[in-house]
Image: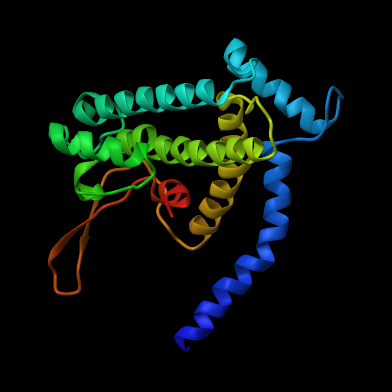
Length: 227
């Protein structure tokens, strides 16, 4: 197929999906129900219950920015600590050792900023615990941070003085946008045969009689949000 057709398919598909996805994002990130008891309002009340006092205050742009930076700094610190100590943590059937300090720093910074720069080989460097609770977690909250920031920017362009609440927006983006999409993609990958297991690597014998180590793991769940 000519390259121009691929380009037209991408542009056409994006244009077609932009309207329903845009409407859904509006529903998810900035509901119009005010003070009622509709289902969307009930979801926000549940998010407020989860977040507690931190999500109940409207924030100016300074407050929004400070909370966003502070939250991501905490996430970076936690993920760096997990990567540097993964040999002491569970879900490590292949006995992966700790990442070297500079590599752990680079990896944590990369996934915190949603750039996903990989200077490591995941199947031989990362334990399943690190993949799930450091890297995959960061892929959700870093993308959620980006969506929340765009929602705040959109509100500011309308002249609003308060930009909402970062923690409430982060929950909306994560649980109403990213998690459902990742779940659907993960199911599709499972149906297509992508591995999803907590067992360690397996040894296979090739047709020539040689031994080959095949890495496994929670691949479907990880790739669903990564890709």
